[in-house]
Image 1 (tube, one colour):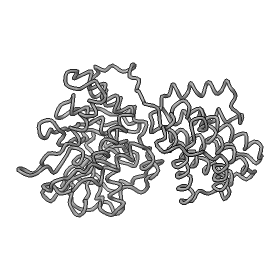
Image 2 (spheres, rainbow, N blue to C red):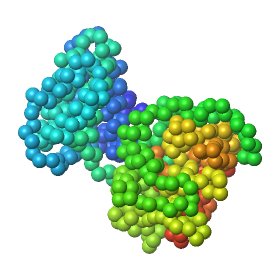
Image 3 (cartoon, rainbow, N blue to C red):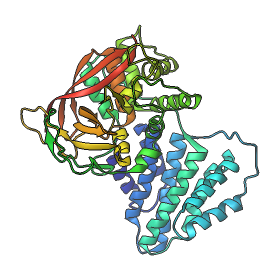
Length: 469
């Protein structure tokens, strides 16, 4: 599923400022055929507003017609891809007039402040609209919004942003994505693991886009043995934090990062809350294409070892990634595969693991990571290292401890990395050769996986063997 294809489709829909019954049917088919995973729904809905802004004019009536067209698209997306959330609170009379008054209050100054955002969330939670009022509640945001439409484009853009924010709160509190099922009929599940890895890449619709969702400054290159600092500035110059904290797999991934003690040899204590966070992350990634493909591919290639039941496969993921073991000889349980690979550890006064770009960015932003430059890639054609590379070999310090060589995917979703490393651990070798086209570059990789405590992931990471443009 391509964002650009939906952008172009929305432009065709909004061109005549109307959505009739025939066009409604084609929009329904568009969403059904695209089969967007849950994390993509926010992007698709926000894109409808973003593209809609392009069609604002100096005619108030035309702008109201555009608002109705956007409302129709959002309604179709919600009814095709989402389901009502069953309310667990006691039944409280839903006050339509109070809802309308709250919308008017929000739209009046064309700005949603923090207290207003909290107020509308509280309304949806405390007085949830009944099922037969869900459509009215969302449609009323557009209807009330149309009262504030003018011939001023700047003000109308601000209004659309307000309506989008209100609809986002509505969907977050009143609707949930339908269970996602990946269609894998077009892929040969007996294909070699390199082709499977490429398919994982192609399925990663949640991947961040370089120079749009994030920007990096690679600065100076060096050899692994060189200790001089070749980078005066941070690696990440910009990251869209909405990407990190609104998409379910990113958000649930970030929630895990503060659950660990970096120093090996120090026993880890896993609380009940942390166990719930682990399961929330597993459940979120299993609603994505990469992880569902990983499951199906592993089942096809190791049918006797990998459970076909989704629930049992989730238990397997929990065991190989989150079960604790000791990394220091004779010590207490102090480590896990997830902690080592994605969070990072300190062992023998050096950084161990720490192979995730989101973790790197967040620690760099806190001032805990000092980027020292990239390691020059091995390549027969001297491919350039630049800001759109999705794989970088880095040198950095973390809280004063050194990491001389560490390779990270850049911009990929948490589910992509989990799927790739899980797949290589379950059906690959200790060293699995993979060829990966990222659209801007071509990489020859070795995915290295080490087992710990007999049946758990000790570490997993990639090494760049070749890099070509």
